[in-house]
Image (cartoon, rainbow over all chains, first blue to last red):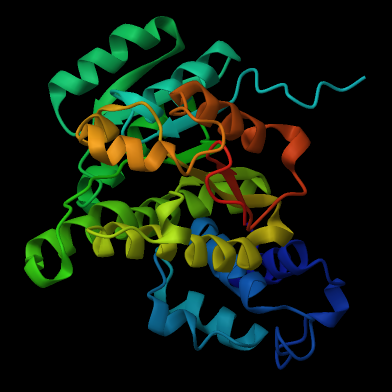
Length: 79
Length: 248
C-alpha cells in the first residue's frame, strides 16, 4: 500500500500533467505547477474521491501547495 | 464519415417536460436514441412524461427550487442511466404584472424557478461533466430577455440573467469540453402563450415577419443541434428562434 504522500503526489501528477520530480513539497500549484483555479478545484475533487472525504470550501482554498495537500489529507483522511 | 448529429446512447435531463417546449425537446432527443429523464412539478405530470417516453426514459417529479429534490433526481439518473451528457434547463413560470402592482412573491417565485434553478442544476451536474471532459448544457431563455416586454419585468430579468449566467459558465468550463448555450424562443404555440388575448396576439403577429407562432418542435430542433457533437465549438451563445421578430 502506498503512503498518503505517494498517493497525493500521484494524483497531482495525473491531474496537472506535471512530472513527478516537479512535485516538491514546497511547490505551489499555481506558480510552480502551472495550475489555474479550475485545475485546483479539480485537484481537490480528485483528492476527495481518492481519500473518501469531503473537503469544505474554506479548507480547499488553503490547499495551495503540495505540502498543504499532503498535510490536509494526513489530518483528515478516513484511512 | 462521423455523424455530427449522432446522439445515440446519451443521457439527458429535461426539466419542465410534461408539455409545450420541454415535451417537444424530450421527444426529439428520445427520437435520436437519447435516454431522457423529463421532469414535472407533480407526480401526475411525471406519469404523463413516462407515458410518452415509453422505453426511451421516464418522467420524475422535481421541484427545481428545492436542492434536495434536485439531488435525488440527479442521483436517480446516475444510478439508473449512468453519467448525464445533456442538461436542458427548460422549466419556467410566468407571474405577469405591471411593476407598480407586482408583489414580492411574484418576483421571487419567477427568479427562483427560472434563474436560481439553473444555478442549482448546473452546480449539481458539474462534477460529473468535468470529470468526463464532456457535457452539454442548454438553457431555454426567451426573446423577451433581450427585447423586454411590459408586464414581465420579473420574467425578462430572469431570462436576461440566464444569458449572462450562460456566458460566464461557458468561459469557466470551455476548456473541459463542456458547452453552455441558450435557445431563446419567440412566441411559441404552447399553454404559456394560450393565455394571451386576441388583441395581444394580433399586436405580436404584426411584429413577426414569419406572421405565425412558432412550433415547440422548432425550438427542440435547435436544442438537438446544440446537444450534438457538431456543436462542440459553439459555447456561450444564444440561438434565437423567433420567426424574425428580433434579430440580434
